[in-house]
Amino acid sequence: GQSLEQPSEVTAVEGAIVQINCTYQTSGFYGLSWYQQHDGGAPTFLSYNALDGLEETGRFSSFLSRSDSYGYLLLQELQMKDSASYFCALTGGYQKVTFGTGTKLQVIP
Amino acid sequence: EAQVTQNPRYLITVTGKKLTVTCSQNMNHEYMSWYRQDPGLGLRQIYYSMNVEVTDKGDVPEGYKVSRKEKRNFPLILESPSPNQTSLYFCASSSPREQYFGPGTRLTVT
Picture 1 (cartoon, rainbow over the protein chains, first blue to last red):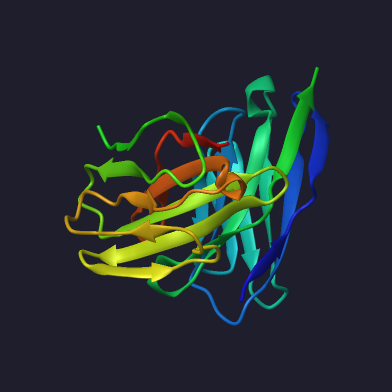
Picture 2: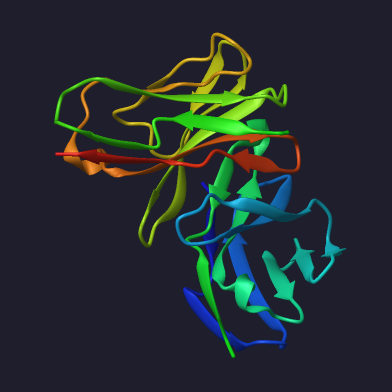
């Protein structure tokens, strides 16, 4: 099977940069995704890494290293609205997706 | 507008009373999934479907059924709900890179 580990909570200051790490165990996968979920809301897609390296989308970047079974989400210029839970997820064959247990990010003034 | 809809949004029911949660997408996606979300456990995949009439079990399929008779619809069926199925349920529709989630259905089984 697949398993992913993330820190359960992270606190960061408004305007700063924060990195949320994700380590995984799998026998094979197509890509690593990141999702954001605000309290009471549905998860929304942030980024997808099929290949090793950095993907940048505005203030958000995501990184994947298959050799290290590791990825991270980088959030820059943190805003209060970034306070949410962040999930990494592995996509395997036939779109079978396994999510991590999530990291709750608190942005403080 | 790309959309995944679920109904009902909230449901309180009793043990053993069959229920169906509907899910519909307007993006012509082949792939659809159902998840449950419980505190501290993240999102766990219940069932997924690769196309019409093609479904497979996810990580927590016990007590659930699904069907995919039309591409746009993927209902979740609980034939005999039990209290341990009290949870927040999400339907998702997928492109190869991205999943689009419905708004969620909060189910309470007493």
